[in-house]
Amino acid sequence: MNKRSRLHIPRAPARPGEKPDFRYVQLSPAGAVARPDVNARAREIEHLATDLVRVLDDDGRALGPWDPHLDAAELQVGLRHMLLTRIYDDRMQRTQRAGKITFYMRSLGEEAVSVAACMALKPGDMLFPSYRNQGLHITRGLSLVDMMCQLLSNTRDMCKGRQLPVMYHSRAANIFTISGNLATQLPQAVGWAMAAAIKGEDHLAAGWLGEGSTAEADFHYALLFASVYQAPAILNVVNNQWAISTFQGFAGGEQRSFAARGPGYGIPGVRVDGNDFLAVYAVTRWAAERARTGAGPTLIEHVTYRAAAHSTSDDPSRYRAKDDHLHWPLGDPVERLKRHLIRLGEWSEERHQALTAELEALVAASWKEAVTHGTLTEGPNLDPDLMFEDVFEEMPPHLIKQRAALRKERS
Image 1 (tube, rainbow, N blue to C red):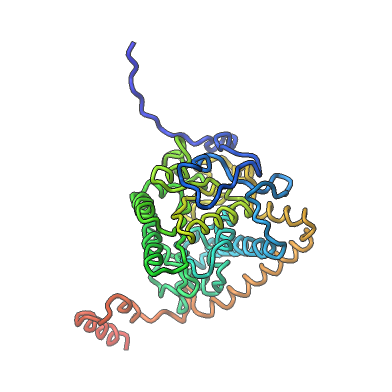
Image 2 (image 1 turned 45 degrees about the vertical axis):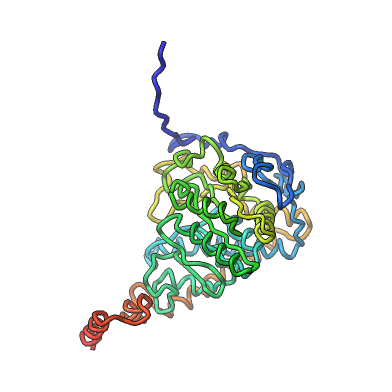
């Protein structure tokens, strides 16, 4: 009997009204995955693309060879950055709902992906973020006021009113401009890394994108160039399971891990628990050492969960189970690091509450200052002349004429 071929349509494990189901997530016990030499060849360590590097267990203990053995002070800094990112996100979400900014995207549940990775890199390394990496900016010390002013598109907006909210950048902090055209930042990161290698610098480039964006051609261009030229680059795939309302299976996550795409190009792929601060730090540090010693690029898949909506324009209750993030098997990154510090005797619930109150006050004060530079409804306003700048080294005659006409109309 002949069998007919069938078209396979990926299906999310749980839809609205169903119980959350994360049995599809392949886990490894904390501390169980071996840590290879940084110079190991991709074909020798293909297991890293299917196993899951974990350090923290459910009781907050750090286990295994990937434990980076950070001191308590560094762990407390990491906890502060993650908690500040979360409080900032929450305040800006409520601010958008109140109609004071037009748009926002939270990184709830993904804070370790940015903060731990950033702390594992050097200040001279260039970062190419996606739009849910505000933890990178906070960890690199970007002013909350400057970030809020970008959301407001006011007179202190770093983007001069030309970008969608959350598209931050910082030349001083070596953070490249975010692009709403997904995946463009990865080939840019590889190009920057190639240039650094040509110049003999000790810097690398790190880029981030969501798992849905791996379906873009730019992702594969980046892997090919990184592989051929052995660029000192770290390419991070943040697998938060959803590309807006599309389950990660539609980007190919059902067949193989996203990290497994690395070995196909001769690049090591590492699958890491993205909600484990210590694991993300350790894997990023390992990949950075590979890059700096000439061993080439690394593809890292951060297995995490987007606890919030895709953006303020999204309603996740229409396509996934209610409160599903509470059932995510890898827990909450802030709570896990807090539990680890308490277990070490270096933190307490009282200190955590005090830090929360301190950071909430900082965010409130920053917003109060940011609105003095202009809001959506009240001045001061951006100078319209800015629309003529930053494109041509020498302004062409037709733009000079248009600018003069605008000034005349305004006078």
